[in-house]
Amino acid sequence: MFDQTNLRVFANHVRAAAENMAYTLQRTAHSAFVKETEDFTVMLMNRRGETFGVPMGLGATWYPGLTWGRVIDMVGDYRPGDVAFTNDPYSGHVATHAPDTHLWKPVFHDGEIIAWTGGHIHNTDMGGAVPASLSRALTEIHQEGIRFPPMKLVRDGVFDETILSIMTTNVRKPDLNLGDIKALVGALNTGERKILAMVQKFGKQAFLDGAEALLDHAEAQARAILRSMPDGTWEFVDYADEDSVEANPCRLKLTLTIRGDEAVLDFTGSDPQLGSSLNVPSGGDPRHTMLLVGVYYVLYTLNPNILLNTGLTRPFTCIAPKGSVLNPVHPAAVGMRSLTCARLRSVIFGAFSQAVPERLPAAPAGNNCIVNVMTTDERTGRTVLAAVNPVVGGGGGVVGAGARRVGEAAELVELALEARGDGEGRPRPVGVGGGGGGGDDGVCSGAWADFAMEGVGPGGDAVGRVAPPGESCGALADVVSAGARGVAGVFGGGGGGGGRGGDARGDGDEWAMAGAGAMGGCRISAWARLPVQDLEVVLA
Image (cartoon, rainbow, N blue to C red; front, side, top):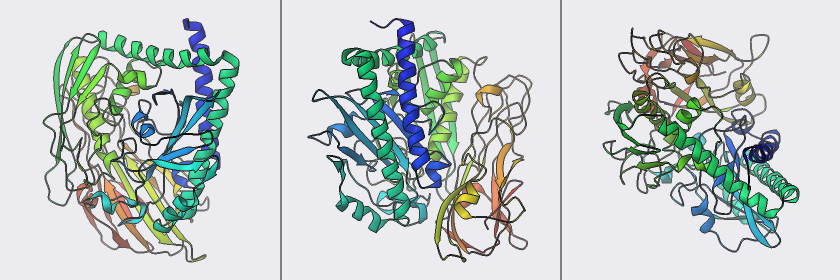
């Protein structure tokens, strides 16, 4: 029914609907996590809960293949105006750590559900042992904050105040949680209106057929990319930082097998689940979105016109043994799964780059340092809780470019911590060292897709941020990182540089990122500086 022209028109309507949802959420949210770092998603789903529409320029990029069917089925008797939610990583494996609260809403037409709108927000805090609910030092999920299994949050358009009161009683910044959740509900309502507008424009059956056609088209695009690669089997191994001081690094192994237009990603040989929070809760789903993040990036690198939806996942099968770091069992801690996923993304690039070395880089940026800070503003007495993402690894072949940005806007530290000082009163982005060395015939590590070339030189330097000092306010900081080891190169290319940091009060001592990552929290003075490689992050 849909030719290429009509399908493109329909795809543009779907994308516009998703981006309207994203703008609604970003402009009405309360926290810097959502408004500034854009740690959120919004999406349109078919009746089975498969994602067929996402925004292209806003929000997190790890979830275009997310499937919601498991959590949808765990809540029954949907009625118009209902909104369900969960943040439990072990209930349906849609949420992947406690701060990520996922909401979904049925869209009714003529008395039946024709689609769903959904999305997630990263809450500033969900309670638990440490501010922001995230630390590599946590050992079980019960320490990572309050969890809600799939249940209705809104019934017939009315919030369940009992659920909201339970949440606000257990978190450190309840006003931010409530503001962001209500903003996401507003975004879901926007998506519902846009879907009904498409039904009115195209007709109900054409809308339903169009959603399926978008999934089928993305699948066909993914299969075409796989057919352009040679058949074969390739292995790649890399290591995430250890989960405690002086512990062993975490081994991530991938055996990639390509046969025609299908691929198997076998993670057998990866380490058993860890006693820290670096575990990735995939539930053994053979197409879990967290296991396929690197695949999305590979596909989009090879075809920038590819549609981003669940159809991309159909040609791929993942094998993650139960009890491994990529398929942990309850009650394993999972809060810092993003650090492992970042290195897993590099492992996937490493395997695919062997299959098509002339078309892909060795790996994207590997370093990622996060500082969770809770402090008090002495002027107002207000408690401030924020995550400062000061530094990430750089891209390949160029200096100071191509880094994976975390913390997006340069004003983030100013907005979250109210740092002041240098006339302009805002942090300034800087470039620091740490890129990998290139070989004559090698592909550098740290290479981002836009800059991937053989033998072009070192991986790009890391990108960081400096916040000028302001007035005194003591802070409790928890430093988590994936930066002690640079990502590996291939074909003789040098590996990326590892990150370093430390408390630079007085003479100060530096530590490797892994040592910092094992900290469960440290108290720092009003003028403490945390230098990362050649970068100093001043917590004012």
